[in-house]
Amino acid sequence: MQCKIVLTETSVSSSKAKGILEAFYGDDFTNCLPIEGSSSNKNQPVNPNQLAQAYGLNITVKPNPAREWAAFDFSLPEGSESAILEIVDAKGKHMETIALKGNRGQKLVDTRVWHAGQYVYKLKVAGFTKSGKLVVIK
Image 1 (spheres, rainbow, N blue to C red):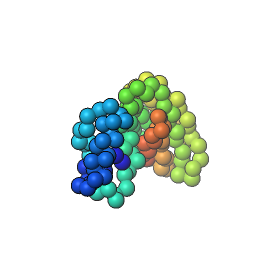
Image 2: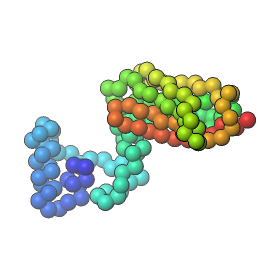
Image 3: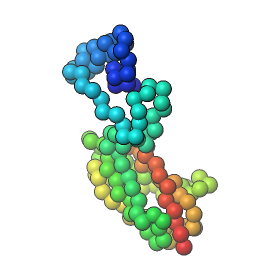
Image 4: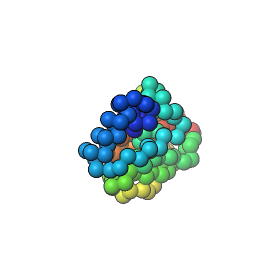
């Protein structure tokens, strides 16, 4: 939020925001990089997945669609060494909860006992959540 004020305002609020950043956080002011795919319009809502990715949280699944297994590749924000991966079906039924260790890695999930359909996965760490969809076919 502070970055948006500093970059988008031309009035006194911009100067105050710069002063706060420098005084209370001990850093010289630098321009904040925009999140990819977003504009600097302060009224535009921030996509939580984009914000999580900007902090280094990322997860992908392959193959997608999956038949017998799915490989989740993940990376966590700097300083994070553990996370939780939750998978639910389209009706919200819990399928898996997996504790992930390490800053980055891969976790294989056996999908042979799952029904064909769509599943939602959520990676949770350090107050951030990144989600996506997995399709299982038979």
